[in-house]
Length: 115
Image (cartoon, rainbow, N blue to C red):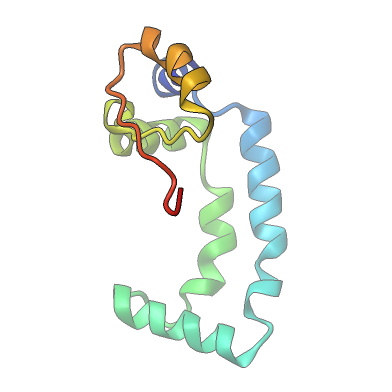
């Protein structure tokens, strides 16, 4: 996961196929996101909170389809710092710790509550 994350943020990034699949999914799910009165109210509250225009949700499909792999890569690279990730690993410490130590990351072991 460390290698893949660093590669994604440097040399690999978003592929055209990933972008197409995600845009199709996000655009396709838009109508269902506003089917109930509470969902519409939530959208209105979000618009007010973030200073968006009242028709913001109507513009989402065009916002999604305007994205390119390059724009998404730039946003991801500016927003994500893999060196600040906190990895949470759950398992038997007597087995897992030996697998984690070679990574050179700080390890904090916690016991499960109630044990």
